[in-house]
Length: 145
Image (cartoon, rainbow, N blue to C red; front, side, top):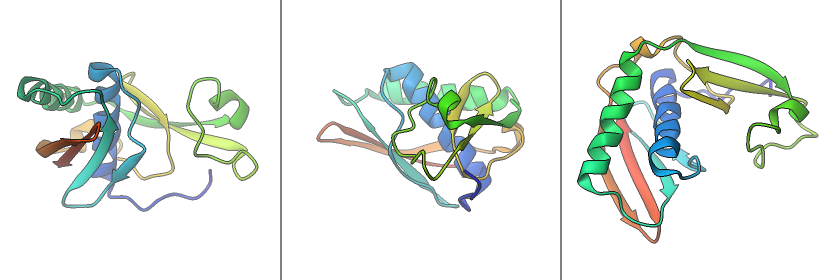
């Protein structure tokens, strides 16, 4: 995984925290459909039911709490074989990537990634879930930093 995607680092880091929080709060899988932009972004999650307004508020509050912990963002390089023991690598071709870059946000979230990130969550300002929708088992979260 030597190439890097040119994402806006604060938004991309916020997306990692959103994904980790969705997994923790709703027991779902990480989003496999995200669109990350500088001004606003969105992620889709497969859920059995639409989250309540209270749950959405808890989601946003939890993400803000994680950001406010000023967690260090780091990377580790693992062999493909070592990474597949802990991470879903279905979207990564082993013959194209012998090493996998893992991004860690403190002890809160760890995932394979080729995007750019901030060095510390203190660099993320004003996280906000702007809107959400739920259709056909897909919960879409739109957000900004």
